[in-house]
Image (cartoon, rainbow, N blue to C red):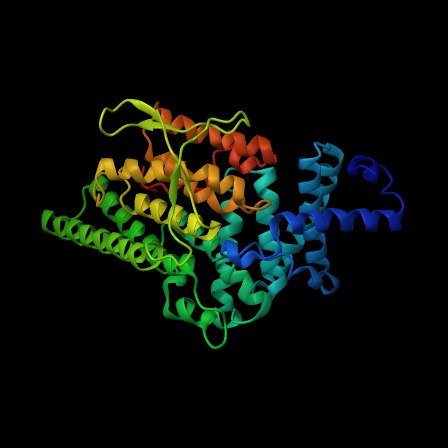
Length: 411
């Protein structure tokens, strides 16, 4: 029976319940696949499913997200509308729960925020909808403290999703509790699994939002023409030193963890320009400056691919050229790092299961912003956004992952 026909018979409560379970199971399989450790974590939905029985709000949230996902994948607007109704109810319940005494510290509230973020990745109710949910999740984490995230689903909601929490902090460009000693150690204490290569990289990434905040402060002072020359010179020197320190830590991570990765390192493969519709990446030959088809980077596993792409993206953020104040990497190195992200995408997108492709939103946006307008390399990333959005009906990619852009707040 097709999903469209199943929707038509939802007036029968027994059938409706069965069909809803089909939708929810489909959501779980796509966003929380089995054997997630080899991917560096996943979206912690499988563990949260059992909590539905004790939380009507969480039950509504699962159903809203599952209906939205199924409706979008099946191009069935009636299913999507059913999801819209449940999503509206979920948001009202969430708002009530957050304002109750201690409500914003409960685990089901955090899971509902996560599900709402997934829903918004398809709906994109507003330009800031995904980001606002992410910020809400960060605030819930902060009030819960690291000690609430040592075991079980609570640990998964932080550790397995840490990549998303850190990238949200980067987009926000403000110092965060994620850089505190407790949040760097407590969830991995005792008999908990040790940090993998990606988490060691995120240990460096958590300090970057504070640096970006100082960049914005400095830019604001210059634009307002406040502060004496001596003060501005000292602040610029301090920022340069901090940027160099951050890039050095990123490079040390690469030397210690990536270059000695037990399963091996990446290798190049010529792009056969297949007819599967996947965009072909063209870049400049550094010797001749002529356009050429870039070689694809293949990896021994998806965890190393994720980690290396984040290493390049974080380096681009630390050395962002939009401010013009601090730049550790030269233009050629920035170009190379952005190209390396692009050369990794064919392997990544064809290897990552389900909708875990959302893990590269930040990475892909960093590469997009690193290329100047009208460059063929930037056009490739734009084509890739469109390709992913069209293939998976994933609106967040069709909108060029704008919610993952790390831009200066000073205008």
